[in-house]
Length: 278
Image (tube, rainbow, N blue to C red; front, side, top):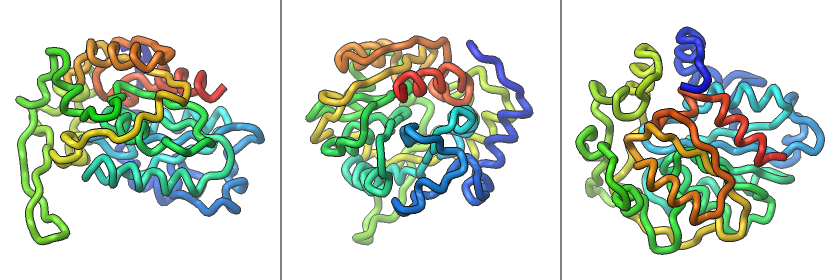
């Protein structure tokens, strides 16, 4: 990995994720009304707000080490929890978060979160940059599942199991979760074992419908984009990541890292986000 990190530090950061959300001045904060935004102690004048969107099989704490670095640079940071239930509904929720933020925004998505930011940013002129971290960048009519299968190399299907969850109409939906004994190998290879074990326990399942739903807009066609390709990714084939980055004409960096690159290599992830913010 490019940026070795302390086993103890990473594990502590992930274990503390839920507590951090509720701590004043901590890494994550719930979307605040616009008139309270300037009161954030980390914000420096002229700095864009950075919004970090996690993907499937992760939660907001997966950004912990990146958030710490961004805050030290004076940025206000939000990392909302993504429902992972449908592309349109997830993007609508993130759009509501964006609507609460005055001033310029840098919108960052990991994995499935990339599809969400491509949809949520459409028609929001305050979003000045899109940053994709080992993420989907769908065009109109494309789904995350379709892009996963565009190139060989993903082993996600073999590593996941399907379970049911209740739908509002009383029916049942299907969601995917990575088997715990395969989580580190599939999602976070190279991350210290205790950290990967914590991540496996806290992973957020994603509905099959969300992965199958086709994009209806593609904000990357009008908003400048940046992309980090993770060459050891076993969820999204690295060739697919490079292809999507090229198509979006994104400023691209390549890191020898697993799908969970924000945990394994927070330095390069932060550097790319800061480049976009500048």
